[in-house]
Image 1 (cartoon, helix red, strand yellow):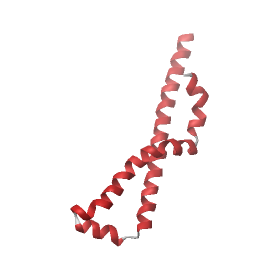
Image 2 (cartoon, rainbow, N blue to C red):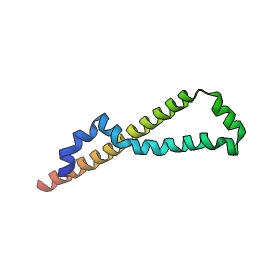
Image 3 (cartoon, rainbow, N blue to C red):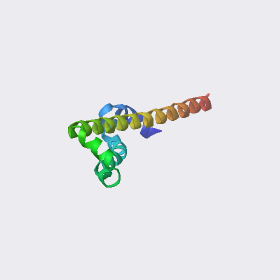
Image 4 (cartoon, helix red, strand yellow):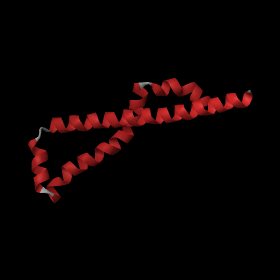
Length: 97
């Protein structure tokens, strides 16, 4: 509880959430790139469709997906920890009364 009291506001910042959530976002983005680069071996129509789009658009879209997943994941984690902290705090106050 002491850790969360000291660091809850720091972990709520968007920059912190983005920095620590990027690995989870990349876990979602990596399969997209794997499918795009291996499509020519297993499905030629998917390869043709992937190459008909500007590669910068694909990279930009995957980057947006990565950032969204990273922030959403860490924000959800923060909310869950904050809820647990508040419940424990209320329980502690009840016990003191």
